[in-house]
Length: 386
Image 1 (cartoon, rainbow, N blue to C red):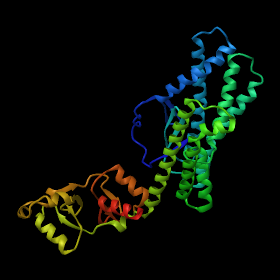
Image 2 (cartoon, rainbow, N blue to C red; image 1 turned 90 degrees about the horizontal axis):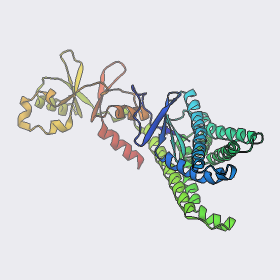
Image 3 (cartoon, rainbow, N blue to C red; image 1 turned 135 degrees about the vertical axis):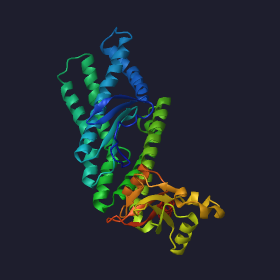
């Protein structure tokens, strides 16, 4: 599966490794990580494969578990190939791929940002299942010419597992790759990527409900009494699908609001005063001009600070005539000046990179337009989301 990550500029150093993971190396600039849960599923695969190994090669003793573990490694190597194909296509479309993580349910490729078209969404998503089906098909073809023994058992398992992975990943439900294929189709027809995510997300929730009932279908359809492990796997898969689909739905709803956030319309009118201006005088000037913010400037008229509203209110009235305005102003550090026309996802990314209470908005010619408060951004976002 591929999973979009929040848009952000490429980091200057290596990305922090998530807790509970082991870094194996990198492929195409992406860290290859193994989650600790993988060792649990690898041990389980070794236990399940061991009887088949014993059947083919009797007398191996404990080495049959080593052979089973080797098959788990081989299987996840093909899962890695599935994920690398996602990463390769994403990079071809100009996206940064931060990591590829193998975990007990398969793998995940973290792609920075969103696809810019339905076509990109389709190909980034569909290439994974296609790769798994190709690996499965190649393994199946080679099975017929592979000599009997452990090698043939490995090829047999590799063929079956990859064909199953390929088919299941094409189910049109998020967070599966097929869900992103469905999203691309809805996006292409409706012109709205967020609607595509909502449709595919709700499809994922429906699939989660169906998976949860699998043990009962198993008994009704095949007359097989479900085991405890069947119930356990059904719950784990249902939770995985439901949580992934719900996250996609929430992500789509949030992103659909972002275009409504426009810095120009949210800006507070600002008044400029010299750094050494008494605070009482600066406040009086702002009240006279009905400005919502105060910007301090140096002797050459260059903006150097933003008056912090909380700090201003904390100064008693009797002290304001004797305190310079710079005493309650935050220095205008890099990242606190934003272009006037910034909006949507770009605005949110800028605020996330340099968290602050206020930002100076400047026009293309360098003139001060006003001050953007994160309180106003949050209020606008929540109001338009209701």
